[in-house]
Amino acid sequence: MTTPRPTARPTLRRERIASLVAAFAFSVSLGVGTITIPLLALSAGYDAPTIGFLVATAAALQLATRFALPWLLGRFRSRELIALSSVMMLAAFGLLFASTALPVFVVAQLLQGSARAIFWTSSQTHAIRDQARPVERLVDLNVAGNAGTLVGPALAGLLATLGLSVALIAACVGALVAAIVAMTLRRLEPFDRARSAGTWRLLRRDGVDVACWASVVGGLWWSMMGSFIPVILVRAGIDPIGIGWLVTASEGAGTAALLLQRGIRRTRVRRAVRVAAATALVALALMAVAPATLPAYALILIVGGAASGTVTTLAPAMATLVAGPQEHGDALSLTGTFRAGALFASPAAIGALLGLVSLGGALALATLVVGVPGLLVGRSRGRTVVQTE
Image (cartoon, rainbow, N blue to C red; front, side):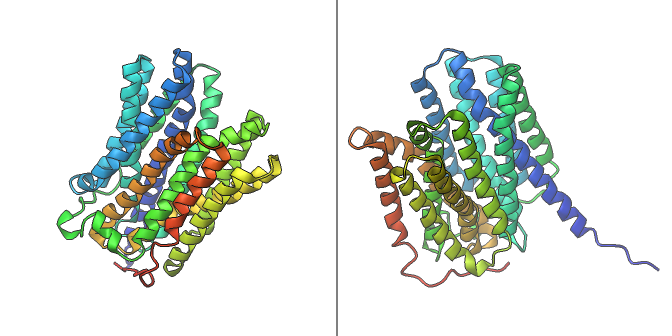
């Protein structure tokens, strides 16, 4: 008589593959949009300030949505939220395919900003729910996302030669695939909000303040990569192709760092987060004063990219390690809110400083302002308390 093989492991393996496919498809869609939407706006006759307003609109709603995520995660299944956010992204690109009127652009950007917030937090909570190795699950999910954001812009550039509408179709396909795959995930029940201490009260937990500060550092880094760092590189005489390769190398270093951290012990997460956040801040400061040469900038961006990639994944993971099973959604929403706040506020703050100091001075001042709290948070408590489920 033969004993039937257990089915739990194959089921979990299929679940993980589906989660990674959804993250990759959504990220490809997002990456395509990063290139296509500004080009579409320019071709429709909008000027640079208007495009900047549209980008800020998406960032503002992404931040606002972060505040509502604990409520959403307590009332809807994570797979439903993943599917909903993918449909929202599909609708955003679909609207632009139909019209390029300014009100349509605004609605599309609002949909995209909200969709990004919902998708990533709900995907992260789903990935670590009932899992013995949450750090590994978050690393895998972020690597899949990074792969998508690397493929998306290149795909957009290729398809844009055939027409911007063709690129928009590709973005729609990516979002549609993510929505379909999301509904094959497990039907995990919503979080029980009654069994959570509350989102903001988690800041009292040992290590959560460090994780939130590090998330601000990560948001600062990525906001600069998408705004003022390219300006510094252009002023240094580096051509667009060189800038593209530098950004790709930085993001690739972040992915490589994630893979190296995949098997990190829980007891070492706190130190890794602190070191990575400090390294990213030093890299930003060096961008302000480094010799204007390609090798110097390449070294700084690769090291900074590796550090920021580590922070992006390990900071949320650090918060979940001291949260209870029903508090994971709150922990991820909290760190995501701090990151989104930095993404939204940093470019505006540095832009305001440019009327008083140089770009290098403004960047150095921003790193100082963000770095000082890192010397204070987490110092009055002991080591991170790791909860096992």
